[in-house]
Amino acid sequence: MADEVEENDAAEAGAEGEGGKEQGEGKKFKLRLSQKKLAMLAVPLMIVIGAGGYFAKDYMPSFSTGSSSGTKPKVYYNLPEMVVNLSSQDKRAKYLKLRVSLEARDQSVLDALNPIMPRVLDMFQLYLRELRSNDLEGSAGVYRLKEELLRRINLEIYPHQISRVLFNEIIVQ
Image 1 (cartoon, rainbow, N blue to C red):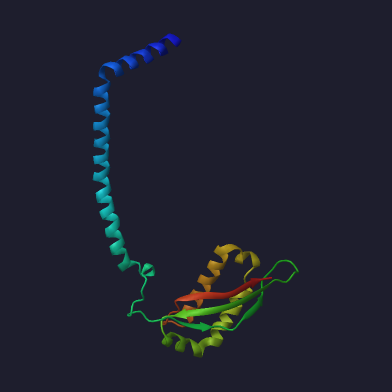
Image 2 (cartoon, rainbow, N blue to C red; image 1 turned 120 degrees about the vertical axis):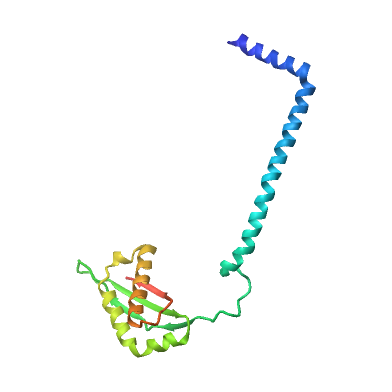
């Protein structure tokens, strides 16, 4: 086995001695060829990335630095603070303290909301009292609560729509 390794080393040394110059030129040619291939791939890739960035500014306004003059600012309505006891199986009472803001696209939505606000607050209170503390665990639980409140309020004020329900404060005790 050791004899085979020595023979291979000797054969490689002999090949370098006889054709070392030719082999060195072959490596340079291969290197130049691979650089050309890299350039051929890099140029179109840079063009695609540049074009993507150019067109993305039209479709992703959140990345734009200036504000568009055509967009109206959102309007907000702060609901009164709510404290409800949560549903539980044991005798220990658990409470939820919640402060919510509603986001709408314009003032007309909030004007439609004002006359029915007692119904909205009643609906929120009834829904919140049926929740258990484990329904509100983690970000998924809070997200589900947010989506359910949004769905319920939009049912009440149809055909108007609230854009978002925003939590100012949420405490489970």
